[in-house]
Image 1 (cartoon, rainbow, N blue to C red):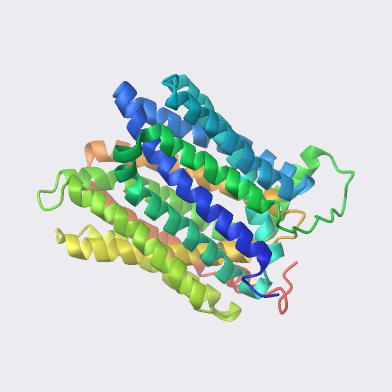
Image 2: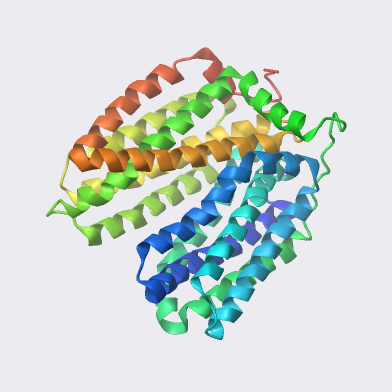
Length: 407
């Protein structure tokens, strides 16, 4: 089976279109809320309302994904979001949209994402060959990242030309179009080994599967630690730039753009470079150490060009180690467990980042932001080195289902 088969292409282009619409919707919504209320707190609350259902429902949604028709869940996820945002667009066009309606829609979007995301992750290994999983993941992420960058780039211009209501409408159409094209995807049915187990037993089966592999557990500890660490650093970048006369808020915005560009470079490289299974562990370690080192090194300088180079390169490597880990988990996990495994992992990863944000914010009240970033990077490197130097982790990351049996 080739990588760019009909099923993968339909999934790829559907997500490209809907992510582009999402980028426009997010920008239009931010402008609309600030224009209507003048409150950044309300804007933050709406963002939280999208995230909270995903954290609460994530692990349970994964069990449902493994029990249900994933194609129907994917189509319904896009269709419900498309119809919901269509209602928002119609209300906005007629001047009837209220903030509480947008908040309610945020909850709906979060619930849909709880089921949609693990469905996509569980389906991908079944529509592309195992030896093409890394390239499939990177091509998929390249499309979504590129669509997000383009959407964010032209969002401000579109807002001034057509306004928020029509941008909402574009997002609605993008979701409905994606749902329509997903109807033509052929997804194999899950063959459940034990159809008589209870929901609770099914949920615990996913947890037990994760804990079964020491290398996987170590990889997840690493991922959660990186999420926590970067959650801290992300909060501190703003006060660092604002307090530095050589930087400032304008350059902070430019830096954000280059972070996305670095991510895109990472997707491009992995789409064309074939990493052998025996080399994945070495590439993973090199990427994660380089990422943390460059973020820490950037805080030593006031030279904006050097900071941009550090962050752009770091985010490229960030994509590399994330994709290698995700692709290995996809290949390792049986099809009847992928939904709950990815939902559990995604929920834990999502929940740890806000904790890092909070800790970073508290430390930033008492300490110099640059000192915290440098210190965090040093501590991070020490912790990372203590975790990765382990034969079980090497065995996990170099996993090849055609050559190695770790069950």
